[in-house]
Image 1: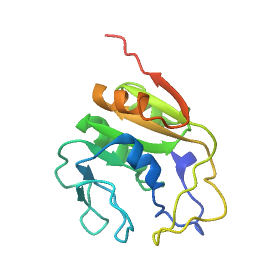
Image 2: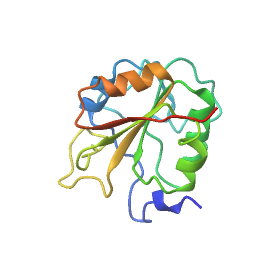
Image 3: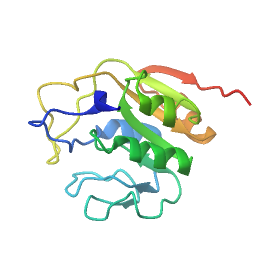
Image 4: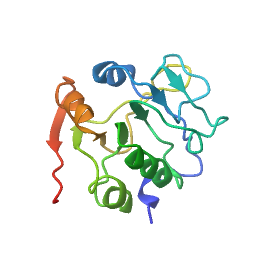
Length: 163
């Protein structure tokens, strides 16, 4: 069960990635789970909940800040299958999601220092940071290099796989 990512019934699930994270990682071709209203772009092409990015074709380098909840595993499974992009998640490394869709296939991981402050859909910042530490997951070598060279404050690790 992946309930460690679930939010309470009173919490909203649409939070924007801080723009400095996107800027540090370079350009993305697709954001398959973008908010409908966004004050800045995260990729060249965006799919919103109205498009259902899980059923659409994924092309190029993908940015994935998935909705945190019961559907998160589906987004990470799709990201692992696509194999080219970076995902932003809470750093809950003991969960089934990590053991199914990250540890066996991802190329690198960056544990970010401190708690991110996600933005509201109008671009404003809340007074509190996230409820857990965050990490960036790289799928593919060029994305691992982008994390390593990003200048973001954190610790980058290469994920090695037994062949």
